[in-house]
Length: 308
Ligand SMILES: C[S@@+](CC[C@H](N)C(=O)[O-])C[C@H]1O[C@@H](n2cnc3c(N)ncnc32)[C@H](O)[C@@H]1O
Image (cartoon, rainbow, N blue to C red):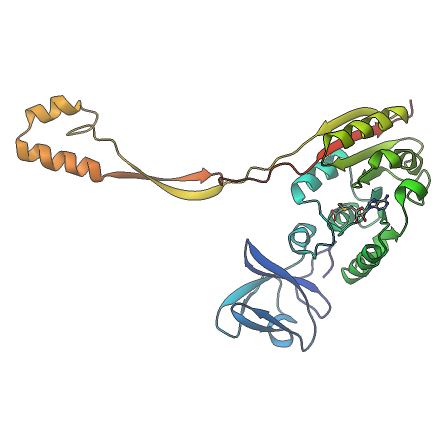
């Protein structure tokens, strides 16, 4: 298993996702002799996981079952241990596209935070690209290095424990793209410019507040960035439900005038007909949005460093 390629079978040392349902899953480090508790009972790694195919249905000790899934950056984002606020896949998908990331891209990022975005970037730029990620909080930087090694993507990423606003990204004219998720991104724009290739590249800054966006846009302009554009992306999900609606009482027969039809029938006919219609329901499947949806996460400001 690795976060950048797919393997059929579960092996010792893998990070697998135990899937109990869409709202209930967690990661597990697979180890010989290891045991994992679920509400359906124990999973024994040596017998229930190692050697089994990813996607298998595993029966737990109390008779209930779970699925064991191959990890992906999207599943990791939903299951990772939070050390900070993180970016979710809706924002990440727009960032990936607008930064034009692809296999071979060289990317700078700060801060690393919990590594949610980092895993997605690494998957996109593998096998020949590289991520330079900067995190000034020492424990977070160390934990990120540990996780990248554990997920077998350490060779694709360099973690630097420094202040990006003071010391930059540690590379010069090498990056195709720069991403910022820090409280004062405007202080890092100059460093971003020198990290980007001479021939140019893309930059994105994520900020929750519009005042941060304003200062970042001014800094981008001062440093000669072009095509400055601020976007927000909102996701609306739908649940598929069977809807049951009562049919209107239109009187006897179909499409008739209620008063006219009932006038022609006997009193007993009228009673049966209207009772039948009142009890009638129309059933159909429909996509229904939940009452609440995820609102604002942050503004995404994109710009281009161009030759001219
Ligand atoms: C919101 S978190 C980033 C989350 C990350 N994008 C993710 O998806 O997991 C912001 C991180 O930036 C770090 N940070 C803030 N200012 C920084 C700076 N000037 N230099 C380096 N890291 C910084 C913080 O320590 C924090 O870990």
